[in-house]
Image (cartoon, rainbow, N blue to C red; front, side):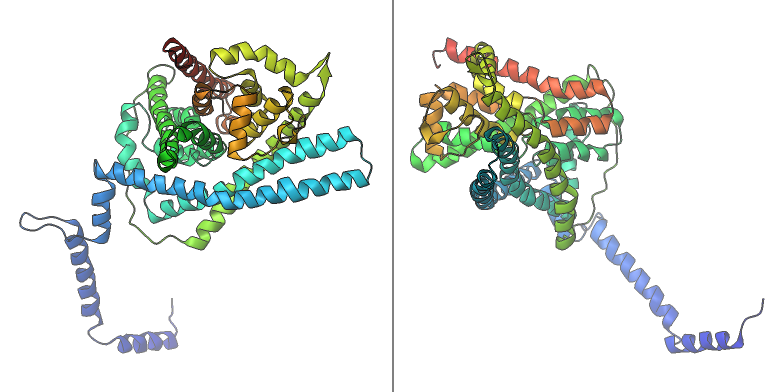
Length: 473
């Protein structure tokens, strides 16, 4: 093979530009870098490794006690920012979609002389349910997912898995389940998808089945409302918000406990096996890529999950309107369902309306409270707030308390058990569909759907029985 003379001359010229000491400088730089790495990572008898920023943070965030405190503070901050920050945009969306657009659609229907049943079905049923989901679900997801992804980019989430690994290992589960569990606090469907990070099929299945015990966006409003108007309201005004927040945190803590207990039970019965050993490399902390994070969170998570919820909420709205307006005999289908389920609901410290709301609103937990209010007002033959059959409505907190206690006959037991049942009931249909897509197994999809209901019935029945025996209800 011949080499062009010009190429050799060019190489010689470039070598000359580097200078005769180039090789020495290169080797010196390599040894310097190696020494810096050694100083920051190797402890010797006489001296400890140099305390770097990463090492200092790891000492705090992975400390056996301090790590859990930091984790609690971190996630409390994320939840607080999500809940507080979502209030204003949620209200703005509600004013727009449930007010201006809703009224405009009825004006258009009237101008077109559309039949009442058609405008009711499409506007009061389908449109109103999807508008509720958007106004309640979109702002929290648009805040929670970017915050969660920023923590992930920063390198914190692997430290969470490191901290919780021992607890989940003792429960026969995988440490990475803590990450999918955290994702479930935003949306259970997203949490189920997040279990893909777990390599073991057995442990991934445990993570999928127990993800419903993480309270998702759709259930937070129910928790916060009950904690505020029933529990927090019993305290002096200065303590009301704190007590209400603690009641919600207590239910969330119960969800973590149920996750560990059910994981432990599954790993020793249906899903026996040893917890897998895995090596977790803690990545270096790095500045999050904010724009990429926003894009990933909004496109790949928020909008996809929201679209799935809308596809489920639309038919649910139609069903709610139909059962409220189609009568059999002298009562609507909803009234017959409520009367049929009321004895069971009372045994559980709930009532028939709550059970019907959870049945018809299975596509989206966001419409549970509006459905309960609508059924309570219309079936109670009350004219408060101008309630109409099949039309979900929004009320102020004080009005909600009045409606539930004076029209619905609710007590403190009803509110507490609703919080417990909201934690322990079947996943929404979006999550059920996601579980099926991820497992392709009918048996485990049914187990993941039914198991939380069984636990919810047992827990609410127990609390109702104890409260009645003690004369508290």
